[in-house]
Length: 82
Image 1 (spheres, rainbow, N blue to C red):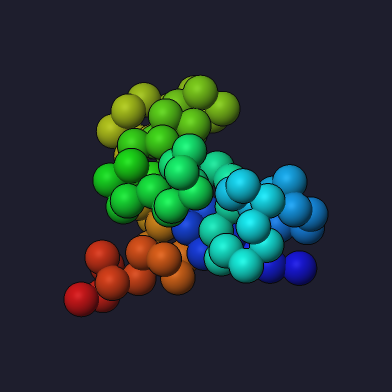
Image 2: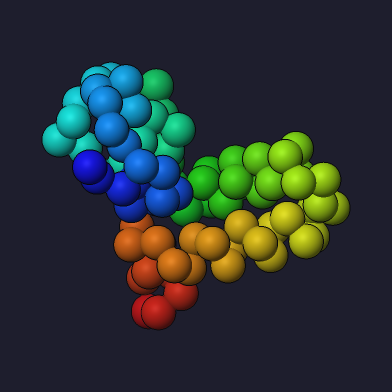
């Protein structure tokens, strides 16, 4: 089982991958409609909004939480450790 490099989601079936492409290292939630991976800014904003919606945090706290989570993921390491 692969883990998404951009959000950490476990990817178990083809339905978890963008366009069902199990060769990708990121999940369908981290992909644009064309199958390419979201940018850092796109992912940060999407994750911030997800945290606001699911955890009820205000925008500043949600953004901080999103960045803390992203710092631990392989896709975003270069943004935190240049």
